[in-house]
Length: 450
Image (cartoon, rainbow, N blue to C red):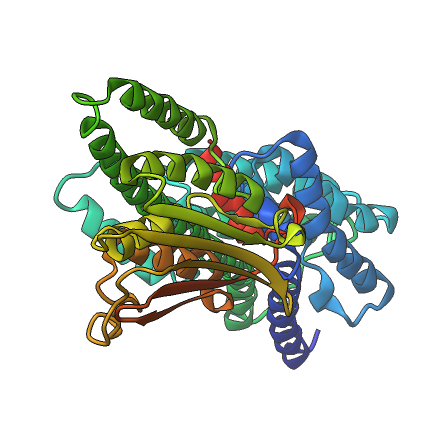
């Protein structure tokens, strides 16, 4: 074969490998299979079908269009599947890509592909660290340098990537010798020129390296997304853990103030507190219906009404029934109500009222917590990094939770006039059921439950 045609086919071969690898990672299912380290039999079969299926078609086109030699990646496919999926994936993948050649009379292609799959699968098991597989580089000089650097001080182990490189070259040499012994039994791209033959060997190594590099970039992206999700979970747990002790501390203070002079009322408060704790400890849900959240607030307000006196703390509700089934973050309203009582009504001698409102408007859930207390001055409402003024840790956590959970789709505003009261308004996306909660938020809910 003309040397120029061989070189053109080698370039096309690299392009085919890159194109197929890039197209496959566009599939969510393939990315999920690729990310798994331990796969079931069914998942291994799916992985083989995803990778070897399209490349078996390339072998078929090489057989019917004699000039399209770059479509045959059967050798590289068996090795790649073996090294990322194990011996079974290597054998199944090698068998699938070799079937078209077997049907056209190249009988030695099938056993050789199976051997390639077995050997590469064995190499996978021999890897000290699975990340060595994905970080494989076709640039052997770098691997040799790394091997020397590792082993000169105190030899400990072989360099897996060098072994992988040598294995590819060795298997490719066997394939070449098989084609010399029986030209019609298998296919092997060859050249009498040593420099072209070296490029043929290099192309096989580059094909394997390209596929692993492209897929590894996707694995890294998936891992980064997983770490981001874990960070989100940690932030949510930290924020919610800050809210619960803050609430319990204030409630226990209310109980302790009644223990000596009104033990019956103190006992009643303890029972209500037990109800609240049962809800906190018995539910791992990060999202609950607004109706359930308001029932929780009722228990909290019952405690505060006893502490303040019924003549000094009034609760007025204006709730749209259509809004009560919307899903909201658990423990969302308690810090807002607590802030109204502590900073708005508590300093006011004659007490006052708290207004709870909810409604649906413009595809948003509007929740308002308002008090007619002492309000806040302009200096207190100056924005800080949290977007809140001197409103306390509970309010800051509510703002942070909304930011973490909803991003820019939720908003909390505070309107306050000194001497007249404070209005806190939440605008949240309408989530009517569990199925409507975005995937990231569902993951956060399930992680809390676990």
